[in-house]
Length: 330
Length: 309
View 1 (cartoon, each protein chain N blue to C red):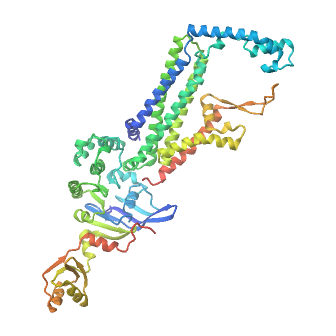
View 2 (view 1 turned 135 degrees about the vertical axis):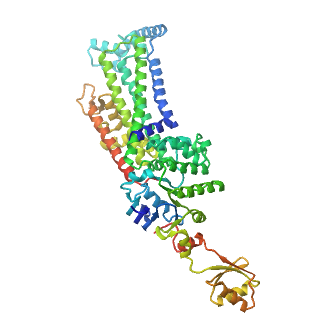
View 3 (view 1 turned 180 degrees about the vertical axis):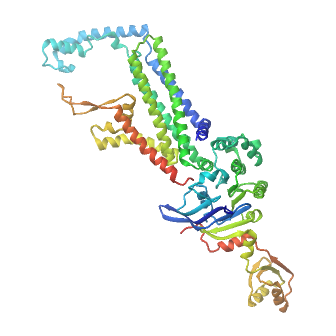
């Protein structure tokens, strides 16, 4: 079995399309890092000065308009039934009175927790997509060129061929994803040190677990795409199906399940796995507040997400293996 | 131990499609003796490639049994596949890899010594182009690479499906010599070909199939002799029209062939005598030797091409 696996690794390494995708696994997170670094760059003195000026201008404006608000509070979105003291406070609040200079700085400084949930998840999403593309491209080429039958003339035990290729795809994609994630977070760590951004050990632990679960998702995406292509024997067919599912399955599930459909959608369950739970709005199911808002939130747990994705993976893997074992090979 | 390298009994292959079932192979009993080159002949669609694909485990049989080296396949194909080299239909390799890379990957997958790659490339005269990409090869070079791949395993049985397709005359000659050489060296070669002259030149024995069934099998010389019930003669006379009428009246089967006549007759002297009695003198009398092509056409004349059922 080992010679077969080694051969598949060599085949993976020699395939140009796969090499491009593997390179993209490093380059795209690098671009995302640059974007993150730029979007969270420290404020310059000029930006502070501009914010201070805007803040002061808004105070002047509020001072001028406060009498108007007190006279016609409904025009300013404030209830006219409020007692006078509260009315003044509500008007001031609506006009930005009592705010701070920071409110006029139009970007958020770096926070490791937020980077983990935003750009960190984006990196994982990109890596999962690239992993899926590697899975489908790698083996789709074998079917398109007809070289699969040639390989079977040397090793006729089909399950071994299936397994060897699966190992190459998953290990190859995962290795590159691990390198990409480690480089990305090493860069974020260095940047945080340079900017004196601090994070507790709990935050860093959360980063490690989020990324670890994300890497599991990358491996699953590569394996699923590979298995799908072994089943349909075509890169185009598999990609078409994957994009079709991505685009239309959520719409279909929403139409079928209505309220709470997120629980059965692929993206939300994937998010639940990566982010250790995914919270979504369920309109009109909660206790109504004073403004008549009755929305509530529901949680998809990581365990639910993992079970959901696991079932889908099994539903792809089993027919893929059975089909490869039994169907005639062109 | 059986003397047969390949043996099938009651082999049947049925394809199911939108337009119903199609029988590609029906009750095929194939027997390929050990050693030498065995031809596998049949019109297009007669089931030659399907039979080969079933033997090699690429397609499943609907029913029937198959044995290679006395081992039941596909159940125990892994035990014998290492001794079987095969080219099925057109060569199939990764187009962006070099010839050497393609062979190296195949050899490495089953732990064959890497030296065999160079040796196989040299044998098929691809040594100089071994490091060029496969998609830059001519069709002939692709065929030669496919044959080189079969040689990697140093096979005892070589199954070649139309191996000279696309080769130039020199290439065809080279491949035929290679096949003959392998046959002489003790390798059993099953050669599927639509070029009848090739089979006649290269093969010791042959099996002819038509419409998914075996029509004839045996040594090539016997196949030709067995199916020759009447000898054909080419006769040239000054008045072929009158001669044709006369010979037909005398009970001979006659057809025209340019300025001559083709006459079916066991004994040529009867033809000459019949004509001489009518004062028609034979200028030329040539026995027409039957070849595998005529035998093949005669045997498959009643088969529907394409094997549709």
